[in-house]
Image (cartoon, rainbow, N blue to C red):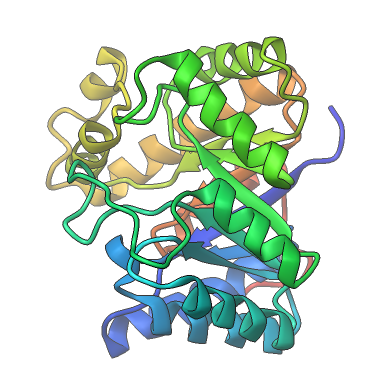
Length: 287
């Protein structure tokens, strides 16, 4: 197997305690030399300023590249362009360009903002006019809830790549064949850019189940059974999660996948243990 690249996703903190956990996680995961650490927006761009602050602070520290999520919702083109210019000026050269969810959350009807970018493909074109960003986009191997079918999902993804995206990062999934079939379909549709599997590192199974329902991700019965009865046993849930994720990643590695993007939930321990199981060790000693 070749050299493995990894990247991590964080979300901006809401409390002092969450902020401490975030920066502890950034410090510890930076030692794994990730390609970048991305920072999300909330629904409707609700965490915009906190996202900017975290992204720019990671960039200033200089240990790892940061990637700022940026969405179309809740802002005019001029406001979005200002954010992009601010990122570039701060040394943030990676972005994750997304249409974004409505302020009401996943499932609510999406309406483009008056005077804003309507879709991710439009946002990518705008970003390219401002600076030569490295641009990641999202995709759904089991289809976005608003997509009519797989062909519709792939048409949307192709528009993003035609607009100038560099790679796509998938929504989380549980079976390797889900990802592999999606990549095969994308290649058959003429998409040749990198598609990176998004891997969920969340040991709270109730939380996973809620997210999976919202985004249309199917949870296999065998995985449901593994977490059964562990509601009050977080340590065992973490062990089960690390093992399941490592197994998923190793199957994909055997099929030639060389980059994994981990949804960390701002928790370093599970990310570190999973990476250890994949043979990735910190470049420096982690306290």
